[in-house]
Image (cartoon, rainbow, N blue to C red):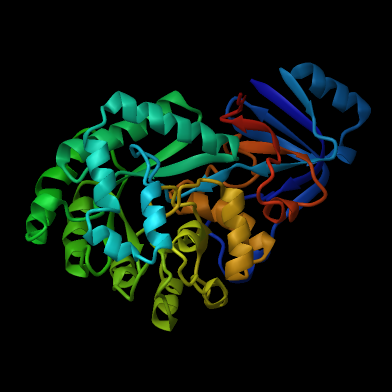
Length: 419
């Protein structure tokens, strides 16, 4: 399919090339074109520019050569969001724990009572793969409607070989049944299952000796992750899991420093993790280490909001040259939302990021945080035609400002109009 979008009020995040994730002052620069056009062919962007560059004869020739002409007068075109941290595959819901939080119980206290992740584990175990897929597809189509075009999906609510593989198979099927681009992550080390509550090292043995090889044999995971936190898994556990994951072609990711200075950042950088995520507890040593590394700091303001915690110091990270992405952490326990526009609003209000930094964080840097920066996250010739056209809005700042309004009019994913 060949699509021509004309009279675009503003074309957002226009770049000739994207060799690496944005750092420091780069994150605050958002190149745009006013009164623009864009042409897609197949699943790629093949041309864009200013309308004034097109003579009437050229305009007529283009319109005759394409399958679809879209008039974006008064509207803006954005690259689709790239959500690099989600737990989209899960069964049921955990709204009763929300009430527990309101009564004053902490995340750790709920977990010790058998709630939290272990609650989702039991629900998932008792859910068939087909039912799990059906529930996940509802969430997948929801995030598409909110502007997301590429997403990372973790396992982690199985905690057995069979159930972790079931989750990853569902994630792969989401990619087959929707236009989403999906990256998959094995998160067997999300919590210690009840069976191993007094034998964490035995469960790590299971992950290393059985779970990772089984996931690799079916080609189910590109990344391997761990919840490196007191009461969950240690730095030493991470080292064992990462060394095995790397042998099987899985690059590390880390749930790091969400509730304490856990050492998750340090072990992530040591093993060249593509990202370390959460980071509510970070300071100068972590900033300096990340700034010298290739690892991206992925901030998850939706979870910080939902758990009523202090937010990461994004301004300090940016000033130190840390690469920052923003993701949703869509999950049933600490962020039951995949709305990236709302994540941007939180980044502005709670982490004092600028609109430009937030937009780059949920598009280009989000793409790099899941290994997709060469083909996703910006308006660049040769990149995938993943984009959305807004309704008539006054400025790009209006998206995070009007954070509960549905502002998307048309969605194009892989060069096809969605819906």
